[in-house]
Image (cartoon, rainbow, N blue to C red; front, side, top):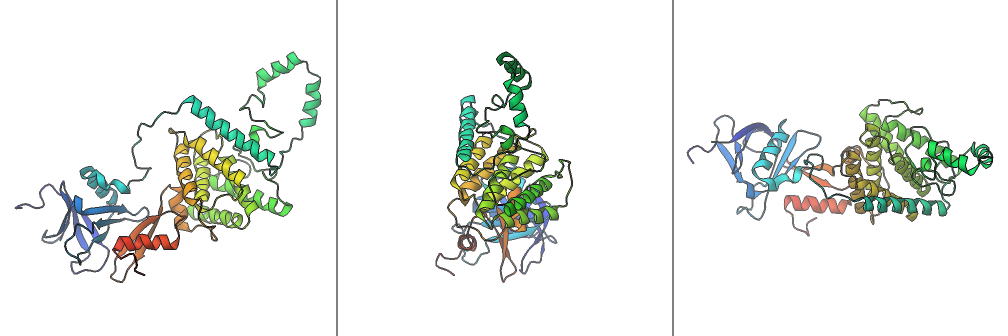
Length: 402
């Protein structure tokens, strides 16, 4: 071709690794493929058609883009198949490549995907999901693992209502509402407020716990409020991101030590993500991020709590309008991927927390002796053997290697 760079959009990048061409390069993108160009004389070093590219990966935390080539299309066995570049224009490069070749859109997560018209959910579906959730709550009550909520004014109200006529009682219910009519969930002394979001600290644990464990879980609930941006009195507070990460790790570390604490943690998180007045609020999404993280790390050991968790996720996942629904669908995926895995011993790392609360797989780099590194993504429930298999496949090792 007389003008090989005609119609090519060029980006200044830095190559991450060791080779004889230097680190400063130009990455060209056109309608046919990707070009690597020397910046001084515009000499074309490599040219790859889009069909030869296996995938592109954008680092979620740093300015790196990784381009991997197909192994079966290359005739040379020693040709380099993975290129890592540093550039502040990684998103522009990725978007331009996808516009030319949509098959390489694997790097786009649910957050960047434009909203698609989803299949509408009927009122019958909503009623069914809500009914299933109410049944799960009643099973929890019948299992006698919950601590009955305090009702200091209950005796006075009961004595007062006995003196009211039936007509007067119905009039009061019509004017002020009734727990039986409000969500229809009051069952054996457990009103809807017991299950729903609260801005205030808990007066007692949701499940039956010894005194020492109960005090510990009340502190955990206060930590959850703090992470969500609520003070102990319901006021909004601001915390640095590093403090948030440390707070999450302390919550998970404390609750992973004992099954009863883990069940209580899930009951608290489900409560805080139930019927929030503003589903798209920062407070609600923080609670959902914490619930998603918990689902990706370890599930509640008690079956009745796990069934309640799944019913809660399915009901909220039916919402295709708010961010709450996106988090619920992500948490449901984490639930099924974590189910069946061995119990974890250690709380999540900083990188794991950051990726999960942003609804992304874990992103990790593996460095090699030639100065290159390969980036891989995997689920938090993946074992070290599964991650090693991903790395071996990435660099082209045989299955029996290592």
